[in-house]
Length: 181
Ligand code: THU
Image (cartoon, rainbow, N blue to C red; front, side, top):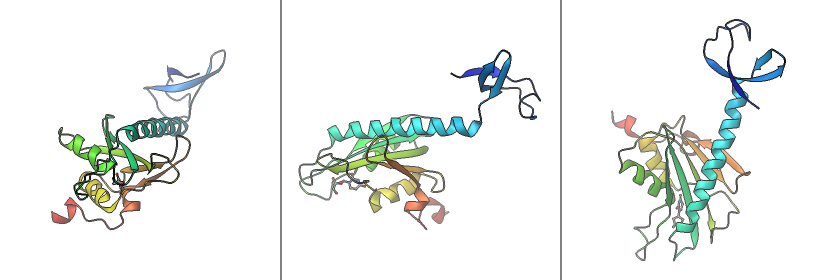
């Protein structure tokens, strides 16, 4: 469906291009560039679905003998790697770790500190009826490592049902490392 072509400068949209872009072949000798935003939108949808799938897989590993509320997370780094996480409860309750923090701490403990987005899913017995919105502590951990303007939080109940928020939207006026500089 797509092909990569070099558009000689000036013949596509009048703008200079000398790098390969995705094009559609209309007919003999006619190639038109596919609009960039359409490709990006499609890539994003593909990426969100990939993240949702990863987060859902984590529900199998949730350790929730006390609440029965399973949460899974897939954290995407700026260079496209994933760190996943699940919630891990404890008989003493307070040591419980949320899925989001599990994912963040796995990444940070391996020296990774640049993040693009996180997908979070969850529900009682692993049944996804509502969005599992990150708790305040997890939002604060995100604030430590992420740019609130650009870091995305994808909340989903399935691969087709999700919403995307920025960290700033879910933690307005957040306190972070910048406040201490
Ligand atoms: N939980 C998470 O994993 N992430 C959140 O952001 C909210 C809460 C977990 C912690 C606990 O195991 C269960 O959900 C019920 O609070």
